[in-house]
Image (cartoon, rainbow, N blue to C red):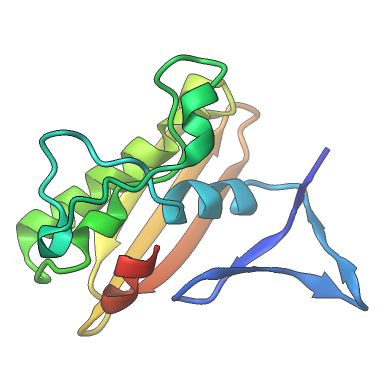
Length: 151
């Protein structure tokens, strides 16, 4: 069974159409995009950008089958951060946290995320997923730093 394919364009994701039909994707790309670029609810100890009080989060997390399960990442918290070592470490941690369910649910044996700044104002994420069946999937994402506020 597959997912409706999503494609990342640097500021958001969109459905993939081919000859007017939705494309079905049988890999992990759609799951990875949804996990990284949906807003996970901020924790009580997170510092919110611009002094906001909006903790964001996915409304359906309130009814998760597994208590405490959350969709998305906290990458949106980096929207006003500078491109320094500490925010890059947090970008890696937030992305790893968002993708941990792949290992927890037995889909992947491991997930590795390497952040970078490929050019000024852009956060790069290199994601490598080793599946339990031995297949390795790699993804490269670039996010306009200023667009993270809208994730």
